[in-house]
Image (cartoon, rainbow, N blue to C red; front, side, top):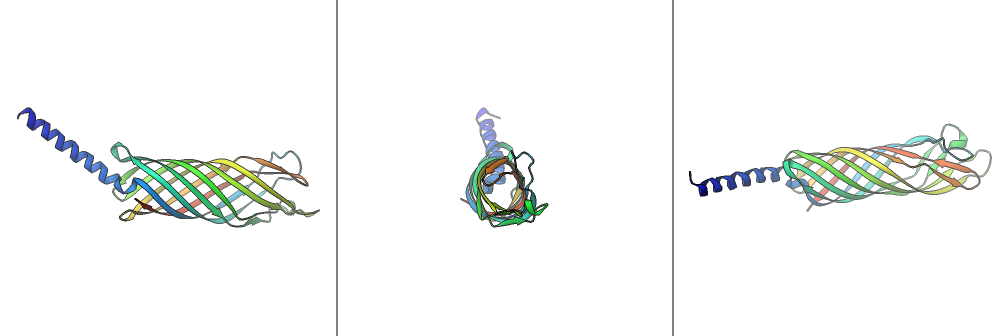
Length: 212
């Protein structure tokens, strides 16, 4: 076989392999926009306050979210990506472990930026892991059984990790599910008393994305 024929055969094989790899990842790459619904456990239990009472307790709450992102295909169906998102959280309240620790968190938003790495195992399924930076402006009230209620407002930052998967529902449209854990730093407020709040959030999130 001549050199030219060998070259043509090699090019054809490489094109075939590249086309197969691209077919696996094509519907999970590029720009995307979508929304999500989450439900999880919001826990605040910290023992590091300077003085006064810790705001303790845990409760369940739902979130609504919006996200935009971009995914890029690597070799062997691996994908990396970046995502910006916001989650809207309704009122969260709990009786706490005692009346002095009862609290309420008002309507707030959690902003995040995340990095994603995963693999398209089939043309329809993409599994991934994500790590992110989270920022939460928390407006809360601690209910005081022995005096006036104590309002507070804190900007908390933290880190998140998540494991999830997306399924190709239709062309350019995917649905997904993810388990996400976020740990925020401990923060203290100084009003009538000194209080510490250190929320952790564990969520199950269902999402829809449209990919361009």
